[in-house]
Length: 255
Length: 255
DNA sequence: CGATGGATTGAACTGGTTCAAGTGGAGTGG
DNA sequence: CCACTCCACTTGAACCAGTTCAATCCATCG
Image (cartoon, rainbow over all chains, first blue to last red; front, side, top):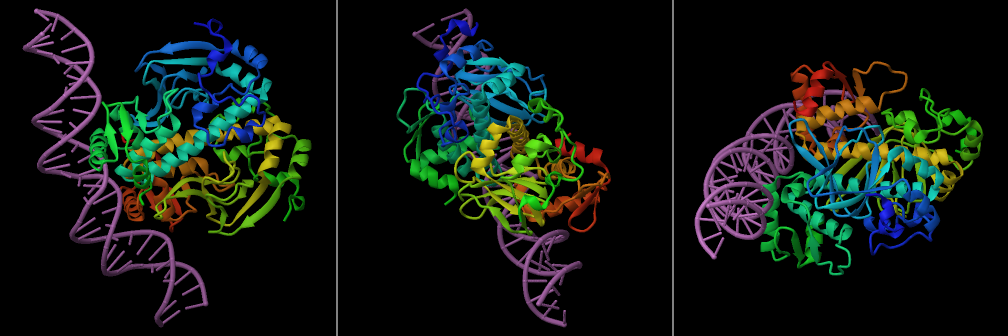
């Protein structure tokens, strides 16, 4: 399926905050917007977007499919249109660390070398744009705003990984889960859903465990612990109601 | 002290591999070179470097001094000329996570927002270049190779943090220390010292602990453990001789 | 020469893991 | 429509890697 079957705006997710009019992306894109609000190419003018879209291929993957694998040659970069993706690294004996969950607007695969340094898998069914690596780099030169935007998004991601290192290295299981719930609430809300007390968790318990450096059992115990404290309610496995976000926030930081 | 008291090449560390002739920094800078080999501005021609150097202020800090603090307004970015710097984040109760050790050639402080998201402190006496944030962003536009280089270096750093997340979340104490020794060997060699079996550790045991998500005591016990296995030798607190790097490599990955 | 502070060592303790059993919802097919 | 299976999740109980607390070492410095 080529991009030509969509109009150009289809590349942006429905309710995305447009920043296209603002040229100073080095600063503006970094005001703390959740990453899905700053999709790679919504800095481009309609004209540039038209040119740019010629190098894009739209693809779909269903849940659990691998999009790219650690060690594969990094031929493409990807921009998520809909759905959720997990990024992970593995040790030879199978221990896994999920380094990030990505949602609509996020991009991935812009590796430093000619091999992907991580595996990306679809958590839900996803629609993603695939862009040949060589061509995206050309585009960064041709449309400097695009390169700046990618740089901005990379710096935001780097900052998030620093926060996650603090979590992994120094927080307790309870603090980790509370931080996670609040972070997901901030980063990912199903579109057109204003209510931010309901958090959607498309990933499995074992994904959460591998993201927080814990085991499934510990995750499960912490969920029940928070439930017994009256701070959350569970609606099935993939929905959490934050009954007391302030309490969660306090628990997340350990004070 | 202004940069005018140095000739321009003083901005680069002594034995740095020059990549200035190579324009295609989006790809070339990413061949896996240790980061000190790809200092921010060694993509610039002598002419551009001259112009660029006008916005640089050289400063010195002695060991243990703070260069910038988490939460401060991010007015400057910094490029290390000599010495070692630690980047850290803290929880309110004092628990600390060091997110990186930086050496000659590395830059830091290019925050996403108008506040630094971490604290940078001198480990040894350091010489650093300070560049006003607004001006470096101008320079990225004026000298696109410079912006690309900064982007490249940021992506390399991001990749390293992913590796560190795997370490923090999933490795044992022994695996962590072995990985650390090998990573430092790869990233930082005192200039003009070819022998890569001697690793210089300018940081304290507690810095190492806070980098690996462990306690000082555990670090100490792991050092003695590796010594008793005959894999390392300790020459004072800040020098380690790798007697059997292959064994360390095997221990680092858990196989 | 005593004081200071990083580093090491020892011994008890514990948060999170491991292993094992149980639960419940979704899908299948008889 | 129920029985059966599967699989993700939860719960329980024993265990252990790494922490905590406490003592000691030792190099440096005034």
